[in-house]
Image (tube, rainbow, N blue to C red):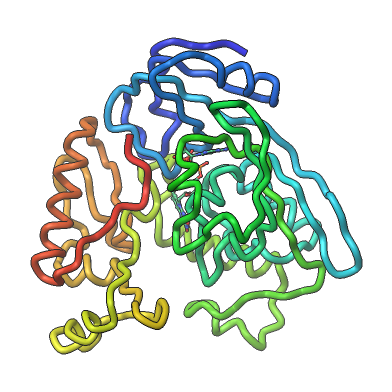
Length: 331
Ligand SMILES: Cc1cc2nc3c(=O)[nH]c(=O)nc-3n(C[C@H](O)[C@H](O)[C@H](O)COP(=O)(O)OP(=O)(O)OC[C@H]3O[C@@H](n4cnc5c(N)ncnc54)[C@H](O)[C@@H]3O)c2cc1C
């Protein structure tokens, strides 16, 4: 394992700002991980595919690029299968493996770029499912004493785009393995709006996966072609009393029940209603087809991203009285 200096981050995050990391190391096994975690430096972070991280300036620390892992079958019976998957495995490779083997449970999450180790961190979700529905436990190594720990799903504090790894364990552990319990029995989730027309069509697992991929490709540009970090803003969670007030002003407001006291409001709809679809400034643009996505069409200055976000947030706040919250990790 080599520790490189002043390493360009341009290709290591999907927003593609060209900043540098003071130190950088790619790790392929646990031994290297334990060694590199002992490297004394001001700050260190684990990076997977960089699709939920944006570097807006040079990083004065160590980036540990996690490439550890493989896909292992731990247990199986006629109906179910338990997989242990390394944190450095690409999410796409796990989906391909599951589709080939006909293991059901992760298919609605096809097309989400990233590594397996990052999936539990923000509890990735799409097309009517969240990854926490299939995770049984998460294994990690702690930065401080290098011990390995495993925590069960119930201790992961999974919530909408959230988990314990964004709070108590934020930047304190490296997720080394994630355990998934999947079904061998066909069991497709077609509850999400645009998938409901597939109910009664006897659709197969590969057909569902290619349908979702097609829908996604039409909405979000490939980040290898136009830099982006997927959804930039989370849907807003607001008290039901505020939903009522908003409905008086905006009768077509799209919202879903979040729990007994709160609703989830479509941030894409809020951004569109504020006239921000296609809004461009500094080489940054709100994607027209999917307004939660900010495209980097040539911006080279991380500071400008903050100005752009502030402008979008301010316009939405002025009209809706809701503060948008940002989804990616900004460094
Ligand atoms: C085009 C596009 C579409 C997207 N669509 C969706 C979507 O539909 N749904 C959704 O939920 N997300 C979506 N995302 C966001 C992103 O793909 C996910 O959050 C993904 O899980 C990020 O994985 P990553 O390996 O790229 O994470 P990174 O960006 O590398 O890391 C994200 C965070 O996790 C930490 N981290 C990474 N790996 C580890 C590890 N092994 N141990 C400890 N900490 C770690 C990093 O330090 C960082 O804080 C999309 C992104 C893009 C670019």
